[in-house]
Length: 387
Picture 1 (cartoon, rainbow, N blue to C red):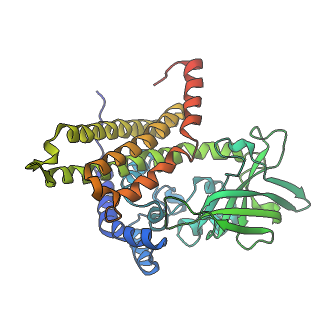
Picture 2 (cartoon, rainbow, N blue to C red):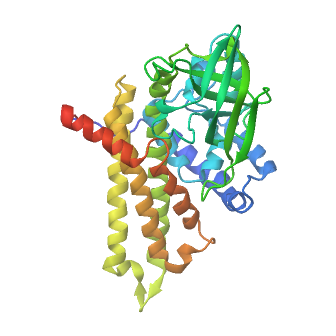
Picture 3 (tube, helix red, strand yellow):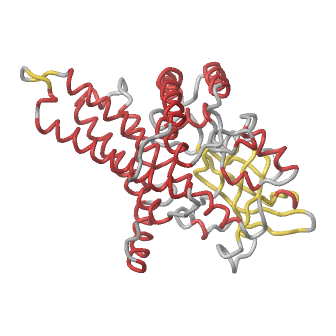
């Protein structure tokens, strides 16, 4: 028999995060959306409270000061995070990239540990104007010059790139090898000569934090700035991306969709037309039923893949399936919620219009739906469906 029940510790963790998000974080959404910034005083208070409860950098191992969560628990927590705005998730609970675990010696003290403690903000600079889903096609280069590396290139759509204390930059160190040993990651401090923020790029959603274009114009960094090993950058990214996609897209999509479903469920019982609750109408019931079915399906997919990762497996095909299914599911569910609310759902008085805009980009970043479908198809044609 397969036991799908959660341990008591996991239940308590999820309930703690759920209550914290509802009581402390969701009240900040309106001001963050309106002003495109989180109220500084409130952010400081809420983040300190999250840290006090051990809710900061939970994806990091306990050995470096993180929460030490399993992948399953990480995804359950991220599901609760998905019930609020992305900017608030980043600032209140921490955006600590797992690639930082490759830090060595003094890098740990300068970058990893302060980031886990919430003292520094890190940005991840991979995407370029000509390299999105095909990350291996980057043109940013790093050339060795004595005891230094010289970075040349432009990155864009870099979340937190405008305020980050330092950036993890992916660059070509061997144009011929590229993904097969020719890509390296570098740690680049804000204020390094030749490193500049060209502009922040306004977005239709995800207000409250910046998305920047970064320029590296003969930017000189020390040899010690290499994160991991020379030529192993692409491999390091691929090792980290499974859990990132699973948690940040799959689990958060379940959370956002669940919040939208709860809003439409309540409204369907309260709103009356033609002498009865709109929830009595079969077409409204269909919108609710279809949403419940899809949320359940994606949640089970997420937990299955998370369990496999905890067993030391690499369910790449499953994570690609989840990336597509989750990102498209959340868009449909939020759209249905707006339909149930009618005109009220289209107003800024409800969180649904923000959720609708925020949901749209998840079908694009971390590999478009089309790219992941191509990968799934290729693997299925070659190996069959291995579940």
